[in-house]
Amino acid sequence: MQFLEKKAREVRDTSLKVPHGEYGIVVDAKVFTRENGDELSPGVNQAVRIYIAQKRKISVGDKMAGRHGNKGVVSRVLPVEDMPFLPNGRPLDIVLNPLGVPSRMNIGQVLEIHLSLAAKALGFNIATPVFDGANEVDIMDTLDLANDYVNLSWEEFEARHKEELLPEVMDYLYENRDHRALWKGVPLSRDGKVRLRDGRTGEYFDSPVTIGHMHYLKLHHLVDDKIHARSTGPYSLVTQQPLGGKAQFGGQRFGEMEVWALEAYGASYTLQEILTVKSDDVVGRVKTYEAIIKGENIPEPGIPESFKVLLKELQSLGLDVRVLDENNEEVQIMESVDYGDTNLNHIIEGDRRYNNDEDYGKHGYSKQEFSEGELVDVEDEPEEDDSFDDFDGDMNDDFDDDMDLE
Image (cartoon, rainbow, N blue to C red; front, side, top):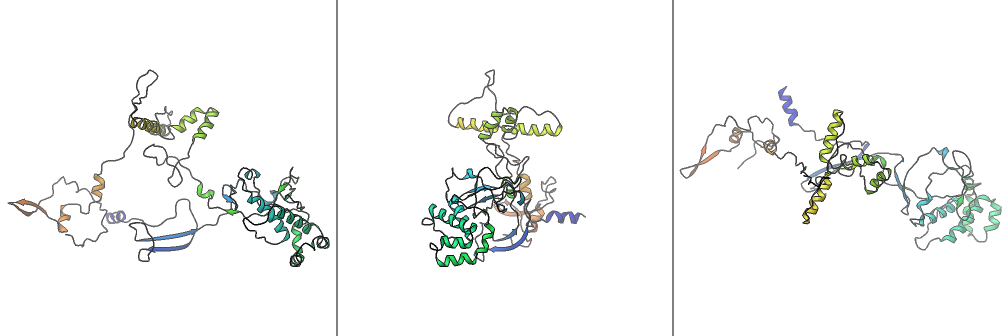
């Protein structure tokens, strides 16, 4: 049994595991080595990279964007029957907030959605150059053409537009006229707006809405990767405030404007707690945790570490700054920086190759001292209180014991 326990201590699990909260299917594995000329970090001779694929549906909180910097976050996902729909019953796929257009002044998305509406109704794709493409007048004329194509009979459309369109275009539109059924009953005006019905009530919306087809992309900012929670965790060494970000297992930033919001509501105790015991009051957060565990009342918070850092910065500028209480007496601010365990003996002992003097002798080492001007070997019995006698572990057992030592 002791043999098994010793072996269990010597064996380390170095398996590569999927990070906590991740999942997926392994789709690829690549091995990088210095012999193949792969770029590796200093000190790394070989690396293995595993690729894991996941299939995720769009969900609330995921980030999407068009091709004009018009990015946004999915705020709601509805059943198709609850989406707004066209007069002929076709539902929309995505609804965007119009407030995202005027202030950002990315007019490209407006031109894109109007021209795409006309192109989709006519049944073909349009390639327009960046700076020398279709202008507003061209787009509105094309919308008029599309409206006639989907809402007039073919004979009426041919009589009205045969002279202005090329024969090849007329032939294409005639061959694909069955496509018009998708848009039958949808009046396409020059401004690209259509009266929509509410999918929940069936009533018309108060104002017409711009519709069209837009390239919309799913960005690599998914809410499943962003979600994060923390109780206690790592703190900054200088400010003693929690670190930031999911990668550092950090806390939620409570910024200047959030402080203003709590001040406006008069939530003074919540504000005090956030700025002290839940942040950088080193003594206070320990006492608060202890009080919660013991079921006692939470004590008064202490002095935040950031205030002490401010004092140190002012003192480094040559300013003699002191803190006074209500009685005009100086408050003694104690240093509360915890440097951790500074005793390195356990690290040194754990990293020794040989446990005692006998091991040194086995591997060719000997104790020597001067005698009559010469170095001579001395055989010395180990002392009874040898500090290594009770050390039964060796972190370097995996080295070859037969290696030559000089």
